[in-house]
Image 1 (cartoon, rainbow, N blue to C red):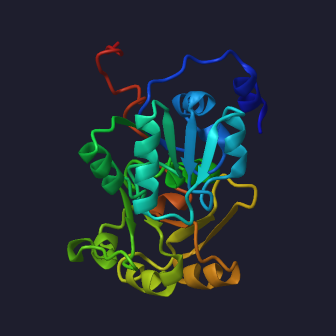
Image 2 (cartoon, rainbow, N blue to C red; image 1 turned 120 degrees about the vertical axis):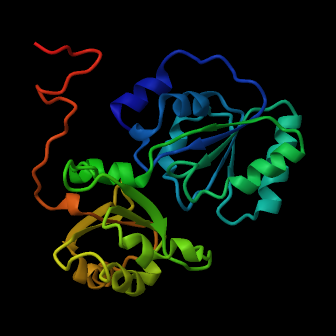
Length: 268
């Protein structure tokens, strides 16, 4: 744990929260990238359910020593949701901890629907996504003026089919900053589709377990994307960022330009 999270866990006791399910984004792995609200909830919640295959154990050090910790990596939705419902009905507060941000590839939609049907109150707490943490590690802005102004978050078809209108080659035609999740097992197919539209010299950041102690980040030209993935033996928890912004670029935002005037900066 860092000095910051150590200080938080040893600071004043937070007021207990009301019995409900808190669907919390744990961020990409680094405990310091939890939101303050997520940290506060972890320190007071009665019950913590977390996907232990995707969330570092050290995050649990924030939890109360007497909190009930339930690991869910080997459980199905039909097992997880009744547990949450029963605990809330027993007047306990429940944190359902998800990796990254709950709005992206977290399978919370079906959980929320079942909680609504059971009339169980819940709240969603956002978290930092892997693409944001990866961009920070790479020290890049993914929206560079006069170069690229769009970010696409997507995946390639696998067990979960991607709608035809969102097929990877179609999205690649935009040549935007494309963040590709859940696709390491299909990297050859992904590379081929990307090369239909991105130039060969386009760089790809291959980001494995961003924010974890065993994090790996490799930046290679697009035609080397699959080979590098295999060389590093990456088959899961890998994010690809394909973007013109990864190359040395010049470009300046109008926001802070001396000729740009707005409400808080008048013309001279």
